[in-house]
Length: 427
Image 1 (cartoon, rainbow, N blue to C red):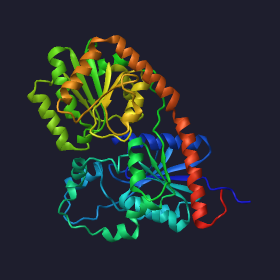
Image 2: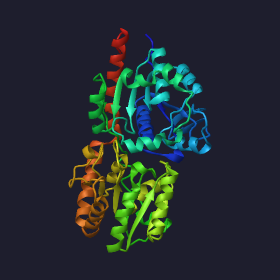
Image 3: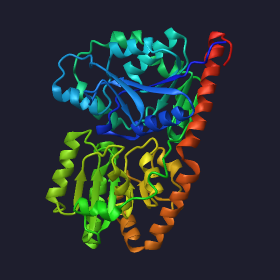
Image 4: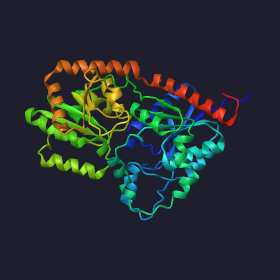
């Protein structure tokens, strides 16, 4: 009797410790859980934002391959922008890796477009099941943000359409053995858009023990933050989607009534022009000494944990957000959270129970957010109540081990569908 295949191949568009985000956290953590369960996960991705072809990140093997953007007339700045966010890349050597990786149990695509099509085609040719996770929003993306993602290729002739057709890029979600949505809002819209019911909701998770304790005062000392300041924290990509401009406008209002308040923004700059506009706002409004910007921290940097323990409140003002894994991290540090009433955040946060929600699209959103911040500044009991409720929520519902058990059940469902479709003996 042959041994069951053990390798689970995760395929994100990019994966680098120096430009870390929620998707990278999810892939690494579920890979670690799969290793503990006896599987052999590996990450196969492009060389976008990295020069290292093969390495281990957090104990998980990562294999990166050359790629291109199949458009004529792209500048270096265009390519860099697409590396940062949303680039529809093509990699023949990566596709060859998918075709030749031995002992594959299942392919797990964390991407769509041409690269997702490569996963689909490799799975079909090899008669292996494949699942797709929607991390960044597909059916739940504002039109303005989508236009911004496509700006680098605007009016650029495309020579890669034939490869998109060959790889069945438009068939990925239709042909997948299972489509996983990290946000309830995305799932609801996917149910209306797709012609099948192979859909599932799987929330992201958190290593609550990792974030349970940290050195907040030490973090403040190292980064020039006054110990007595009321510190507002945002950790996310510096990107229009994350809406730090609104947070700055709210903080400006807060600062006028609470002059000892400080704001800390941490994250990689995925939209340099947007980051420049934030710096201009900070300078022109006299906030240079009160607003602190730090580049994105590696997932293994202890300061990532310490930053949460240094703050008094965590704010996520996103225009849209499929899930919001940083909310779980803030909760695990026992911190109160204020977040936008959008996307997956609406089902993640129970307003006035484990966090406060506000409407980022309202006419007076900055004023409303500033008032929320002022309320928490004045009410330490509310800060403690919300922080404690969030901590219990993170520990009881979102531990990675529990999430991975649910993921394994979804893999089994995908394998069952795959076997039925091909008329194979079911696993």
